[in-house]
Structure formats: C-alpha cells, structure tokens
Length: 522
Image (cartoon, rainbow, N blue to C red; front, side, top):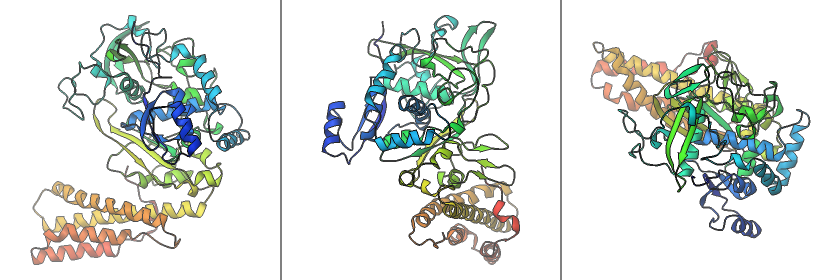
C-alpha cells in the first residue's frame, strides 16, 4: 500500500504569505501553519489554501502551465465552497460582493466539502485517485518511467530542455500533482501508452484543451483571496448543457472516453475537459515511481468557451507567442470586443464578471498571463508568465475613456513597430542589393526586439502618469532604434543615402484611414 498522499492535506500548492499581516492574522497563521512566516513562501494542501486564503498574497508556482490549470481548478473549488456555483446573473454578483465583504472563506464549509469527497483526494492507490483513471491499471500494459510525467525532463533522443534529471528518478509527490495538472491541460497529441477500452485500441492522443494557448486571470498580487473570488466566471459564461455540473472527484462514475460529456456548468467547464488519462504509481515515501499516460477521448472534446482565453471569430483562441509581451493584449482584456482586419477579438468571459465588481475591488486587480508557446504535437518551445500592474479599474464598463486611451496607445506602439520594420528592411535591401533578402530578417528582428523592450517601459509610464494627456513616445523610440541599427550601414555615401531615405519614411509615416485597423501580429 502506497503512502496516502492527499491533495487536500499535504502541501503541494506553493503560496507566498502576506507580509502585512496584523497581530491577529499572524497568530492565526501560526495556528494554521506553525512553520510559515509573513512574507515567506510555503506549500499547502487544498484545506489550508482555502482556510487561509486571506492570509496569503499569491500563488507561487514555478511552471506557468501548471499554474494555469491550478488556477482553473481552484476557481472551481472556490465556486463550490463559496456558493458561487449557482444563481442568476441578477443574484450572483450580490453573493460575490457579500463574500468579498466577509474577506475570507468559511472554514467549516471548506471542511465539509473536502470531507464529502475525502476518498477522492488521494494521489495513489485509491478506487478513484485524484484526476486519474483507475481503469488504466487493466486497460494499459506496463507503466512508463516516472520521468515521463515531468514534461521538462529529457526523454529518448530529445534534447535536454530545462533539467538533466533522468527518466527513472522518482518524482516527489507535490511535484507529481503539479505535473499531473500540466498533462491534464497541455498534453500533446501523438502516441501515448497503448490502451484498450471497448472497441478502441491504441495510444493515439488528442492535444490538451489549453495546449499552445494564452490564459488570462484577474489577479490581486497581494490578496490571494480576492484573486480566487475574482477568477470565478459569472453565470453568463457558464455552459448550459444537460446533466449534473460535477468535477471529476464529485462523480461516482468514470467518464466514457468514447463519448465525452459536454460541460454543463462552471465546475465541469473548469475541471473535466481533458484529452489525456493518467494513472500514477507511488511508493511508501509518496513519490511517483511509474505512470501510465494515454488517451482520454477518442473524439474531439465537445466545444466550450473557456473563460480565460481571448476568442477570435476566426482562428480560435489567441495562441501563445513567446516574442509577444503581455501588455500588447491589455486592451483585449479591457474592451469587450475588438474588431480587427480579419477577426474580431472577444475578451475572456471572466472579465465580464470583473466589470461588475465594486471600484475599490477593481483597483486591486491586474492580469496574470500564463502561456506555453508550443505546437499541437510534441514540440514545446517556451513557457512564460507575466503580471500586469492593477489596471482593471479601466475596464470598458467602468472607464470607457481609459480603456479607449489604452487601446489607442497599444495601436500606436504596433504602428511604430511596423513602420520601424519596413524602414529597416528598406535600408538594408538598398545597401545589400546582391545579398539574399532573407538575411535581412535577423537585422530587422534584433532592432524590433530592442524597440519592444523600451516600448513596454514607455507604455506603463504613460498608463501610470498623473497627467491624463501624457502620450507615449513610441515614434521617438522607433527612431532611436532605427539610428542604432543602421549605424553600420552608413560606411559609404550610398549607405548614408539609403539610410536617410528609409529614415524619412519612419519620420513621416503613412496616415491612410486603415492605419488603426492594421492587422495585429499574432
């Protein structure tokens, strides 16, 4: 029998304790977590996370895709223990406001909820282990090495990505839970462990529902309780399919992988959509010693609108791009819809509920951005995370002028970047007439990268400026980057002439009517 690793009670969720606890809160922290101290990080299970959420500043996950799935799961549990899983669009905001006014979760309700599903929180050797499918013990053959669970370990002929730990080294229980979540949302398409279920045999897997996407969460950087409550989507974002709205640990029966259920409410939307089935084997120390990872659905998952992604009328949700800074999509959080040249963007539906929060709460909230730039199949490029300052007081419904000004600033930055790229390309091509035009790409991109680094600083300075008439100087930044990049091209009279001609295009950019709707780089 394996060590009974319970995700309810054993620490696997990294949190940062608030540094501004008063005397009573410090005493409460010592009672709840004797080893924890204000301002420091610790690990908690679900019970202490919710009972002490008002004492914590933020989650402290090291891996963005793990955090993205964890925030969805925690939003679902928040909805359950706080009673935010029912109600109409008219009633629900009042219930949420009452909870925020209380300032903490009811510890007894947390205990009651966790006790009701106590046998479902174990990671190993349970009739229904946490977020796993016990049927794989019979439907799959031999398990794989524990390192298969850890997505950044080297495997086969793949190059080392972020760690040198070998595949056969056991995975500590807390880390195993986190990587279980990553597979739940971000598993690749391709071949997994061979599984025989009913009429289907094989190991071919679909891609996880969040694979290659960007997730955006309302975020109070120093108040985890507020972040959790603000991350629960409102009733208008809930799917309305038939059937009970249950999380995997709330269901008595395991899902049918040949005919997956559609989400039918906020909890099933946030916890049941996965393309991969897993089963972990543990030892007496709570470590994962082997795993089985295979397909959880033989068909595409039923369509659903995830409340934390930017939807497009064409092309599906916005995909992750490690070269694109989070602030360049900020206006897509603030404006409910944003027409483009080829597609209209629709902000994540969770922000519709943020628009109904009281101003004093909105002023605490920024955006937590979590993404993994990857292909639908095996190739993983880079995961990344970003946190904006508190900006959601400028959401369109609360501050239409502020939202419009931020959108205008972002478009201005994009326009200057586009003009910079065209001017640099023109200068390079004029000087290097006989070279392969493809060689100019590195020259242009290096300058554009430096531009975007400075443009982000300029953008936030303008947003924070007390003077509402302050405008970011993106055009000046573009000219500075142009001059730096083209210095090496001016070694000849011809080069100086080519640079001057291209610079004039940047100094006096085009102003045609379609400028404001120029296609955004995705």
